[in-house]
Image (cartoon, rainbow over all chains, first blue to last red; front, side, top):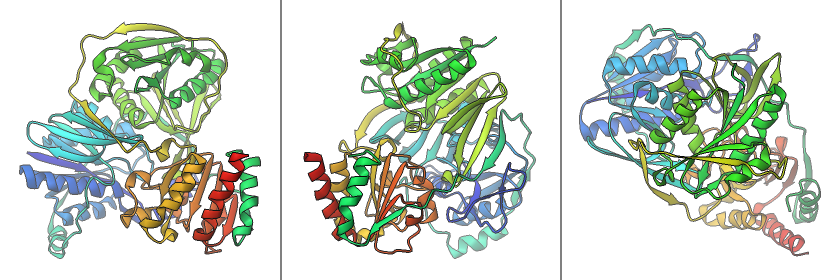
Length: 248
Length: 323
């Protein structure tokens, strides 16, 4: 059984985001990049699935040379192989999904994990797109998973609760925070990861259907009012909530 | 020539959701500008308030019906929506970005090989093109995009577009009984989290942070949320500390929210938290630290101890409400 996990290299959530001069990208100067937080849950689940069902795990990432850092982190956590689909040009989500689907197919992976969303462009769609392109079953935003060779039970987060989904292999699962506790890479794992080869491949190019016109910063919020420093400010706050915000 | 907008109406518990009516209203505004027709599609079993869609600007609704479609199924819903969108002359599909919409829309997009824009917060029509604005990096930046494929899918963020009634007319419903249903993924159970309002859908959110000093003090946050009829939210710090469930987390690795009122109690306002709630209409911050970044985006701030101010605030609101 081959288990794939698709991962992304993104600006740290603590990073300030500025727009580049062409207005079509972000300015990455001084920005620290990390493994996408949701992908940590995907990696952990891939490792747990291997421990349960056996097989091999492969991490796949599409992007530039810098993505190798994130692939190394996956290897250090215990993933067996890593593939970099090297391409730094702009791709919309469907074009990314097509390149990933090609690689998953050539790997013959029947269980595929994604983070439920990349915290850069926040589309939350690539996992579902890949599932449909491959004709795999899919469950997104998963918070509980029980996977066996003939049956998959996955709970996904919905408004005000969870829905429990039953399906079967082959499958794409997108991981939500809460699915598991990602393990830390051991020192042994980190050392071993340094020696592993990251396979580089050239992904096919596909037409983009979504075109970026412009990126911009949101309008700054007007500085608000400090109403006071103790309980005497409460009546004024309640008046404003009633008369200005009209929520009471 | 394609000249129709299709809107997906989502039902849960036999009721069309408010967020779907928001999508109808947004779609009907665009349809008027483009001089396009508008039609709605829904999937489910018995649906009680389907005709109400007419109030928001759509006169025709197609209802794909079967008792097995009462709960969501990725596989079954994808096939039905794909087939209908593919066969009709509709050029544009609008769908609300709920848990269901976010799952369903990309499946249809991949099957059709067409462009999809998720999480739209504004739409405009310029030089014969429909342009969508969407937040990226959890709202630290915004992006304007357009779709070049002949079919186009726009997923709208819930709670942003307003579901305003535009008429009293009832929609005409055409029911199609579905026979062949693909249940390769199917919901076998729905677990409700004790009837609490979800932050993603709430119009008022009261969130607590590390300043609440411990999970045992969140009853204050809950009480304030209750008197206001709002939902309870939490900062990443308190979720990571295990005080509150992740489903309540607001911020870049939690939920991005835009309620009418957001009250931050004992939340300093880390950049990833601000990103997730800065588009709230009114922001109230109560925090001991006068330099807390949350005060920079708060409309109304009180610099003080949450344990003194919040009980007084709850009493004052009760008083005003009872008058």
